[in-house]
Image 1: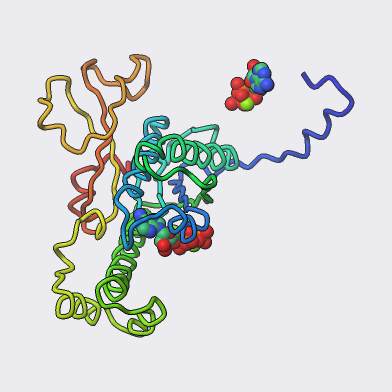
Image 2: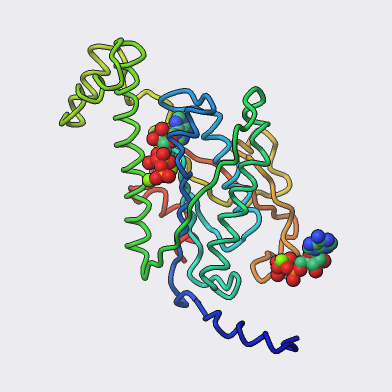
Length: 274
Ligand code: ATP
Ligand code: ATP
Ligand code: MG
Ligand code: MG
Ligand code: MG
Ligand code: MG
């Protein structure tokens, strides 16, 4: 292998193993999606097609990597939790980060036309990525609480901003000025009293973001109970260390729009943080 006299340069590639036994969080974020969303006719404040496409690309990543146990997305970003015992690519930082970011981006572009049939891509979208290591479950819980709180803050702002523009006739500059320094309560009041919008009744997808979890479904689960299924993964191979004795167990990826800050979500799924 290392035959030639040039091969020594390989020694300059240093190991970049991520600390064993720690949770990894990968966060991807669309590059300049403010511009990308305008160039591709996203509806404001929330384009459902774009959100569903993000969910789809994220679901593909869960399908490809059993070590990903949870994903949370909003706007142009997605966070993935990789279990602390993962040996994915021998925990090589650059390998994991570059491969997963590339797989997500490829999937986003591959499925673009299914979600935007009348909106050809004007240029290839791209995503940046980072991996953060967390030592314990408290930090992981707080990480996801942080992202979901951010979802709420941004969505309340954006919903009020676009109501002022689209229904209130304000320019974007005026709307920014109107909202400058306002508290959450003021925004709720503007929405309710000026535009008759009760924020709390807006689609949970917008208020809570998308949470993807892997759930086990037995073969005989009736079709109508399989709500929220986006993709079904084939049964795990028998030799897989995580496979179960009941060979008919399948896992599916469910897309939820629920609270992940309180304990309820986590108490029902102890395996996520195990
Ligand atoms: P950066 O490259 O620094 O991330 P950015 O322009 O992508 O820059 P973000 O803070 O990531 O900035 O914000 C993403 C922007 O993309 C949002 O502010 C919004 O304008 C737009 N956007 C993303 N998803 C949607 C969507 N589903 N519907 C409408 N607009 C969206
Ligand atoms: P890894 O994910 O580890 O990189 P790999 O299958 O991509 O696995 P490489 O060592 O990168 O392995 O080799 C790339 C392989 O892709 C080549 O061995 C060859 O089989 C194939 N390949 C790449 N480009 C071409 C090409 N232009 N024409 C024919 N085959 C190609
Ligand atoms: Mg940014
Ligand atoms: Mg962005
Ligand atoms: Mg963003
Ligand atoms: Mg290769």
